[in-house]
Length: 521
Image: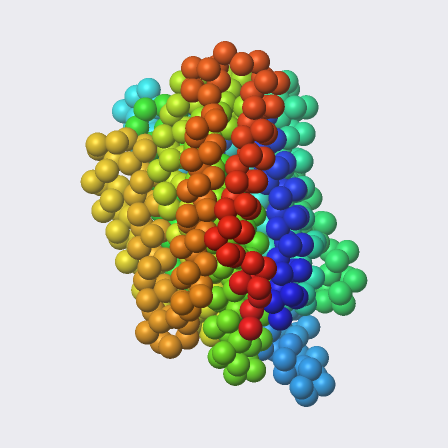
C-alpha cells in the first residue's frame, strides 16, 4: 500500500512542483509589472474571492464530501457488477453546474457587493470620497472579469476528483500549470494594451480557468467517465453528498475564511499590506502545495476505500505514514525558508516596481506564516481522516472554533503588529485547528501517533535545526546580499540550499533514520 501511495504521491508532487515553479515565475512577472502598488492590492483581492469560493464548491469541501461517496459507489459497482458510478457523476456534475452557474452570474452582476463585504475599508472610503475610492471602483470591475473563473475551476476540480478516485492523479495535478502559463502570457503580452496592468492579469485568470476546464475533457473521455450532466438534487448519492457538504463547507475552508478575514482587516491598513501578505503566502504555498497537499490528495481515496472495507488498522497506518512523510519534507522546508527568507524574496521579486523595502515587509509576514507551516500540512493529512469516514460534523465544529480564535487573534494582534499580526493570527489558528483535529481522531480511537512516529519527528526536527545552523553561519548579511549582482545572488543561494540539503541528509542518517521508517505496515 505504501509503495503505491508513495508512487502516486511522487506523481502529484512532481506535477505540483512544475506548477509551483511556474507559479513563482508568475509572481516574479506580477511583481515586476505591478509590485505592491494599489493596482496590485486590487488584483490580488479580485483574484482571492473566486479562489475562496472555488475551495467551497470544488477543491475543498465539495471534494472532501464527493470522493468518499464516489469511492463507495465504485466499490459497489465492482462487487455487484453494476454501473451506478456514471449515473452519480452525471447527477453531481449537472447539479453542481447549475448551482455554480447561478453563483457566478450573481457574482458578476453584484461584484460591488462582494467588494463592499470583503474590502469594507475601501467601501467606506468610496462612500466618503476617501483615498481608497479608486481601489473600490477598480476592484468592482476586475471582479467581473475574474469571477467566471469559479465556474471553470469548479467543474475542472470535479473532473479532477473523478480522475483521482480512479487512481489517475497526473492530469489533475498538472492542470494548475495552465493557469500560471495564461497569467504569465497575459502579463507579458496583454499588459502593454492596458493603462492599468491589473486588467491584463485579470483576463489571464479568466483564460486560465477556461484552458484548465478544456484540458480535462480528453482524460475523462479516455477513462470512460465523460457523461451528460443532468439535474439530480434528489438523487440518493447527491443527497448524501449534500449532507456531508454542508458542514464541510466550514470545516475544510477555515484557512480560506481566515485569509479573507485578513484581507478585510488589511483593507483598513496601509497600501501594500494585502500585497505583502500575498507574496508571503505564495512562498508558504510552495512547500505546502508540494508536500502537504500532494500527500493529502493521494490518501483521501485510499482512506475512503479502507473505511469502506472496514480496515481500521491499515487506515491508521496510512495516516501515520502520511504524517511521517510530510514531516520529512516539511521541517527542512520551514527552517530553510526562515533562514533564507530575505535572499529568496530578493532574488525572486526585487526588480521593477518591487523595492528593497518590500523585501523586508514580505519577509516579516513570511516569518509569521512559516511558524504555522507544519500545522497547515498536518491539517491536510488529518482532515481526510474524518472525511474518508464520512464524518463532516466533527471538523466543522473544530473549524468554527479555529475561525473564532483567528478573529480574536486578529483583533488582538493587528492593532499592535499591523499586517504581520494578521499572519501570526493565521498561524496560531491553524495550530489550534491541527491540535483539535488530532485530539478528535485520538478520542474516537481512529488514530494515535505511534512511538516510532514521535521518535522520527523529533529526530527530523533536530536534523532540520542542524541544517538551519549551517545555512545561517554561511549566509551573508542582508547588506552583503544587496551588494551582490543578480547572478551572484542566485549562485550563492543555490550553494546554500544544496549545502543545507546535504547537511539535512547527513544529519538524518546520523540520527538513525532509514527508508524503513517511511513504509506503512
